[in-house]
Amino acid sequence: MSYRVRDYLDMIADERRTGAYVRALRKLVNAESVVLDLGAGFGFFAVLAAKLGARRAFAIETEDAIGLGPALAQANGVDDRVTFLQGDSRQVTLPERANLLVEDVRGVLPLHSERIKLLVDARERLLTPEARLIAVRDRLWAAPAREAQRVREVRAITGADAFGVNLGGLRPHVVDAPHRPGVEPDDLLLPGAPLGTIELVSVSDPNFEGTARWSVPAPLVADGFAVWFDAELAGGERFSSAPGSEQTLHRTLYLPLRHSITAPAGGELSLRFCAVQTAGEYTWVWECAVAGPDGREVVRAARQSSLGALAFTPALLAKGSELHRPSLGLEGRRVQATILLAEAARSVGEIAAALAAQPALAFASRQAAFDWLQRTLPWLEAGSVVQHRR
Image (cartoon, rainbow, N blue to C red; front, side, top):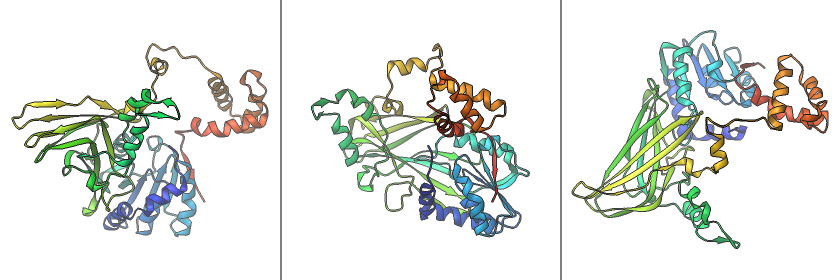
């Protein structure tokens, strides 16, 4: 996912989230601080740390927004103490290790992209043994909930014809689709219960499994579950994505059930939630059960997964098999030719001309090849490290 400058500004404008980080930085930064801003955007926290008196700050970001950092640092009079690096932090070697880490590589949940792997690598290679982390731990919570209006509307589309076309065959991809619909406090049927805690100073396993349980005081019908996190920062600062007016831009995750589930008074309701990382992305798996007042299980809902929301087809699944034998299409042949030319230290203009001269690559002109390169090269160059200067 590529972020726009406006996206980063929206993050900064989130007073509850950014304010908590700023207060924590003010408590920890001193003249001996060497700060690492991981997933830095254009380096807001790195520049702030330098303004607060840090001896040095490093900002690392994969997105192009990091190129705006040097101008930001110069405008704030700290360009001599902040270094901006574009690339995967796991490919970066710093001239000195940092003793303070600031990061918020979260999505709707703290289990996002390769955050845990980035933290593990930073602790091992980029931080001193006694380094402090601004983000200390994330606590995950869940609560049974009613179906939000937006979710009902989406589900309803697959229950009726749309302009004469029956969409019922798409229903399985809707009922397994997690949402960020803006769950309201009134949608919660019971108070939040803990799913588990991620200790960011020591976590090493990117996968997560937790179970939340509730005693049911009165009969209820749950359509799904709301899941959120409380972030605990250094110095006692915190913020939350829980439903309500104090919610941050992370929002609350809603996990729908294929069929509403009924829990009797005096019984117990439970939710098991797993986050499994594969190929740098998370798959969420959830299942719930109901036990009666006597403790016997009376209902177990079908296990669901966020994979069900994807547009998988038999052909696509076959391509994911270890037995699949890939063959290069036009894009693959173009990339192959580009790699060979790049390894020969040719300029972009020279590569474009060489590509356009190969009829099998089907470029209408040198300009068409150049335009294709501009879209493709950032992906091919991903992982290389670029230092940005004013």
